[in-house]
Length: 364
Ligand SMILES: [Zn+2]
Image 1 (cartoon, rainbow, N blue to C red):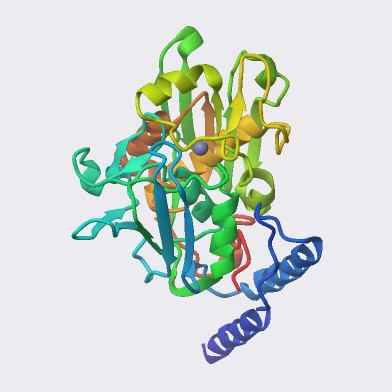
Image 2 (image 1 turned 90 degrees about the horizontal axis):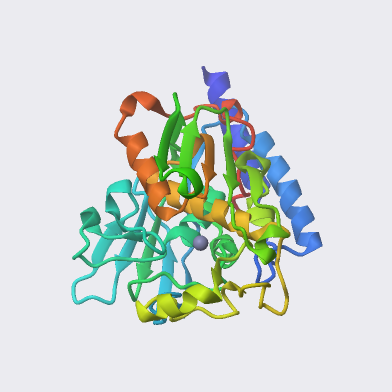
């Protein structure tokens, strides 16, 4: 027993020895080649150091701030992301109200899914809310962050560059801290599927057992610009490529919908700086697309954020056809309504976790 304890202590020493200065990151969330190489080395050292040690929860090492506008309301908003204790989850805090209101990221807080995912205490549509949470939550899921307090000064998360890359940059700049509590995953035991519509309007989303976390998404836009791109994307979170492969995919919109949205008071903060805009024929952004399949990848980015309201990282396979925030939320509720379809699991020995899930991004 004593030998085992010493082994854990030594592996902890190696883990802290793997820490180094924060790598430089460009504004789109991508490290410079030299920094990327250093990150890979630190990642390999830390993954090796996990042998025999618990797979732990994560929060931030220090606080960080961002200022931007909400894509729908167009209001200026300031975010402050703070470290939070183990098992507290991710909590938004509306600090602009006379009495600050906490809004926990949980499935029963979802109050609106029409254009984006909005949360309010208890899901009450009349209560203070926070809208467009999915890109920030996607970044948290992609970096394996379990606990976070997010002070926000308006009812909408800033859109920044329209993707999750700016949030990845912010979170990594603050540094990621391992905590003294086991990370708890929701592991699917059997398949749950939700469907809507029939024929041409059919949509579905599914979560099923899988030893890892994999996402498959198919969009089906019959549009000259979108037809030229990949409409079917598979992404394995265990690959460690969230930041490179998914995080930079921007939200997109069609000019034909802009009038309708503006008449409903939506999309007021949208511009070519934060949305891929498509007219009847082509992409209007002068710098084109960031990925050949940026549209489908953004739908995966959104799904990762929408699924994170479960309150746990997932072990399972998500697949979807033309799903969106509403159907993703319906899937989450269907899973949580049936405890026989999942287990909550943790790993006393991180090396026994499904490949790649022990360390989605290096902790510094
Ligand atoms: Zn989105």
